[in-house]
Length: 90
Image (cartoon, rainbow, N blue to C red; front, side, top):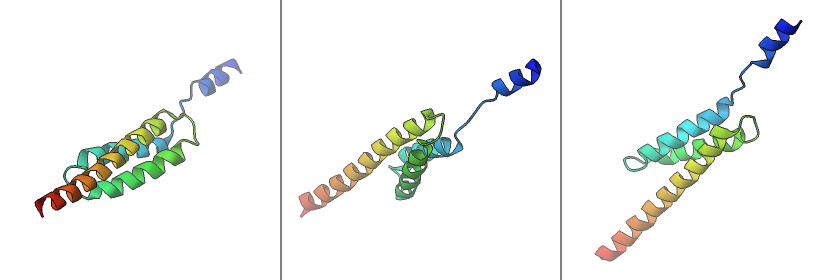
C-alpha cells in the first residue's frame, strides 16, 4: 500500500494552458518588431495566460500575463510613435 502511495505522491502537475500563453507571449515579443502578426500572438497569449491563472501551478501563467502586458505596451508605443512620426513629417 505504501508503495502505491509514493508513486501517486510524485506525480508532477503541469498547466498546459499557462505554458501555451507563456510561449505565445514570448513569440509576440520576438515578432513585435517585424510583423503585425504580433497582435494575434499577443491576444492569444494574454487569453491563454489569464485562463491559465485559474489552474495550478500558476508560474508560467503569471509570467505569460506579465510578458503579454509588456508586449501590448510595446505595440501601443509603436503605434503612437508611428503616428507621431507621420505628423512630424507633414
